[in-house]
Image (cartoon, rainbow, N blue to C red; front, side, top):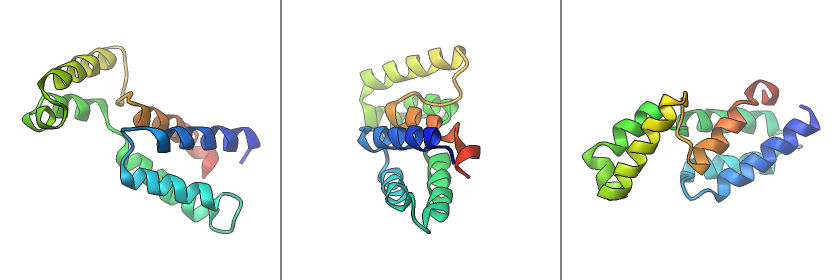
Length: 118
């Protein structure tokens, strides 16, 4: 892997870990990957990290469905759920395939480098 790619993914991994919207599982996989970089465990940790990112990134249609549901209102509150729904519909109309929260944005940036990582 090129140094530029590694540096980019490390930077985005740090952003993912810091994101308020990052799941505990993604954070653990990110931390494990960072610890494995440069070791014999790097390839295995990379595969596990990619799998976790693919599982965690929120497709835009999922975000729309959740934020417009009773469960979404329960999590976000009525006003925030309404705002998230409107935002999600807007970015979908502009071509977004995924949520653009800080965690999902970091996931997407890393997944865009998947071929170089594997």
